[in-house]
Image (cartoon, rainbow, N blue to C red; front, side, top):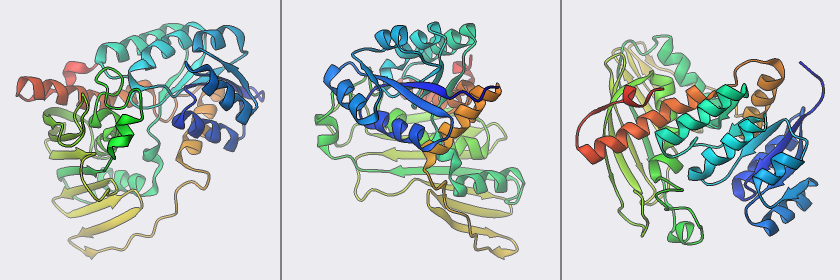
Length: 335
């Protein structure tokens, strides 16, 4: 363990790059030294705004800048290339979700980081929400009795401009669709609270947008302990609603959103739950703090690559299920 700051680079200087820069600046310990983007002007503007060196590509940055770690904030389907190159440069990696959009690419990322002896962590910051942490404790502690069903609903809206104004949103190879880009958070939270998913039946459609990937999905799940569940996700409806999770057990029901507990009722009656607010400096900053502590202390991060892979395997299984019109075991995508 060292008191020296963890020297960070950011690859991808658009919106998520800005989010990661803000997180680095909010946390004691990391130091933003460099940024890279395939658009040189975007990198220069970002570097000027954050007082760091700017590069027109990640390979140049890795070769030139003195770094310890990197945040990968590029389009979904480009993560493998950046992460593999970062591992070769000996850098620990904090990668935005999803890790990538195919199981083969994710496996290559994991293997490269494992062989290089560097950390690969995924960004799933909503696990830090107080309502979600309460739900996990309540379910795991048996306060709902034996879990019967668990459901996630993510009903969002994206205007056509969201896809039209982007070079990668809506792309099959770079985006992957609603389950990868939007609903992965809901899938992750559901399985993190309720336990591992054993098999999946999925159906996807493109209902509104003129894009090459689904904007709507419905999944049926069977959990490892025998409980059943569903995921309903879309970017095609109005109005946009918060992610909602519901857990039904033999002794009670718990319904939570990102902002709090909507319902917690057991055989003993209904309980009002008063929770603290989310981390004051934001969820990304809180996960950044954990990542920095993990790499300096030599411990696993909050969301290791294998943890980040859990929800992705459900999405991979859903895609195969939709193509084959059959239930697909999640184990088919485990390393």
